[in-house]
Image (tube, rainbow, N blue to C red; front, side, top):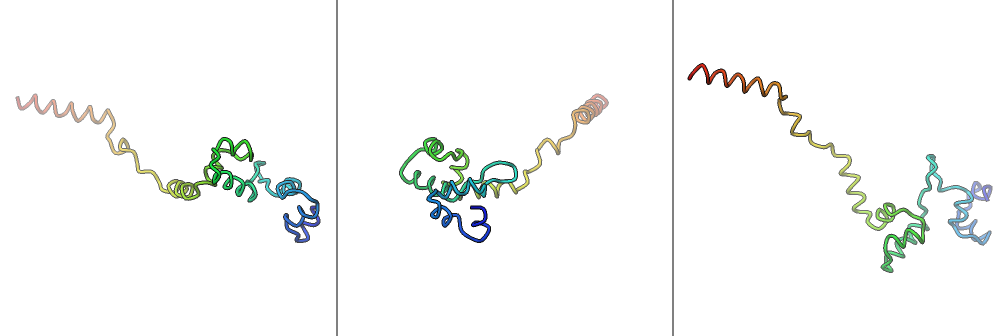
Length: 122
């Protein structure tokens, strides 16, 4: 199988040749394995998730049938929301309001100084 794939045959062609599913051929060739050891979601899994969702199946049932995580199912079903979340992550958060505040010691000194001025004028 590896040689066929390296020679330019597609996964679909190899699957038909050996009478296997595309996902089985991919797992044999380990095409969907990422460097960190996690499995990448195949196109067949994505289409199966979308098909089940159109039928009204819940995310948990889809997870059990396909082996795809709930968060991945959500990203497949709602691609616009996933892209929007990526864009929001790139925006830097505003500095916290406490960053511009004076420290407690300097606030105390300011109040103490004002109290001394009030005592002198009284």
